[in-house]
Length: 335
Image (cartoon, rainbow, N blue to C red; front, top):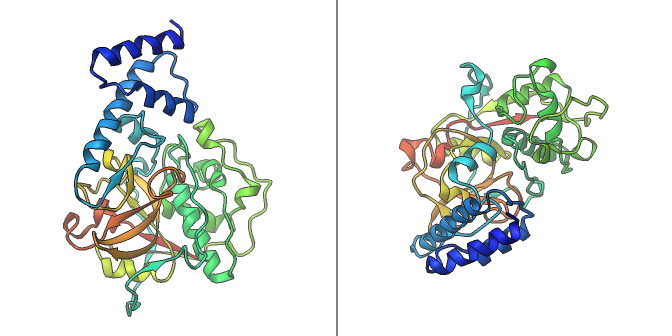
């Protein structure tokens, strides 16, 4: 059966089901995102239609949040969980983090903080269908640290980490199968720095796998990590203090449909602490819907608020572990 005939059959089902299946909107989605669903078109149409229905329902709630269709709209939450994250500490044979713990002193007297306004944050990147979130969180923290010390914003290579930070090359991470930011900090220290993104381009979002480690690029002078620190867990005060110094790598639980289809607002919905996604905190602030942390994701600028999300901030979330567990495993490097 051709895709054209299959879509025609679907269109008849739309009429029969009173418009439940979002045929026209799905066709626009397929074209916009270059999908090829010759064999599972009906299945994806149903998933997309369910997600559209959920978005409309949630947007009718008066809670300050908005949701919208994005590039993840034809995935179930389980599929989304499998393909677009990559922080899973269970992959590491019980190894725990080994960074030093920093000791904060006086809290900076600031009601809000945004490292983007100070030029310390590169544009939002896209990990694609590779569980390499840990590498993007790592480069984001390194980019911020390098900027603060040297006054120059450079974009560092996630692909070098995905290809080279593994057991074969003296690392502990697993490419598209997950990793930990602290492990990556240690590998960059041993590797005498990291290459620029333009010299070692990211391709694993398309290939969906790590490649062979290419050692031909040159590590950037001054990108060597000389130390790295853990932020004390379950403390908003310590996290805000760390953020006043530089962007911070964190892990969160990001497997909720609300997270998948988030557009804007302070995200305060049900969210656990089973950490599965590495991201970057770049600031904090407050608005009418509450206090928040500003989080840079690695799912491209078409997700969320131009690639960002505001997570609820305060001791009321997850017994003090933070919304989505954001306070549990924060860390940052020193260059």
